[in-house]
Image (cartoon, rainbow, N blue to C red; front, side):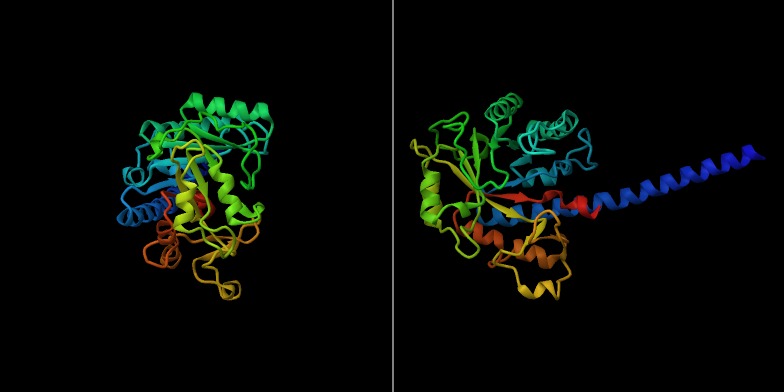
Length: 325
């Protein structure tokens, strides 16, 4: 009798486990697919306006495959919509800045990044480290893997590092495609510069092949098409690409689109504030009203980026699907 009850309980346990797994299978692909569709919609709209527009999602690398496994089938629609992948903290900064990323975490990310690279996508890695030996190690490791990297000595991405004095793999080439990029600068917080002119002058004195920057110098002052054209000139006579940062998985209360009434009367798509980043709010990114802010019309964020003369867009908070899973 005890044996029968024991077997019964085992059967019940496994039924519950299977039911739980089935429920996860119903939920997980939903939010991941919604993010793929969001990015794909942005890409299709942007390229309809500017055919060679570059689209680079940052983090959330698992959604390149249908099942979220590195050996799973590629999601071809998503891969066709993008030109590369941005990855933070690959070798330094995963747990703490200026600290090696645990080997298991680095290896896990690399399995996906290599799949993307082998599919012809450019991999842009941002490691967070300030020790010169760590910065050199970061550049060396990424180069050996075939990734393009930037060793950021400020997590705030508000400065041009003084070391190295020239970008890793510096060159005077005219860079016209993402595949030609050999180095990049990630500088999205220009608040430390006294003026737009000072920011522009600082950038054009560098030889980075690619600059990732913001559309705005401050909360209200936007960079113009003429200013972006100035920024595209490298100091050594070459030409660089300039790509615009844009968060699509969170709303930011300092952006032009923000309405003060939302805090008391939140729209359906606006969710909780990110406890780690004041003023950043989770969004239900699949809801049309939020997507309309980002793309699809003449008042949208992406249209402003295109009209300002950027070569592409760098999409952040791709991994927002994890929050809803």
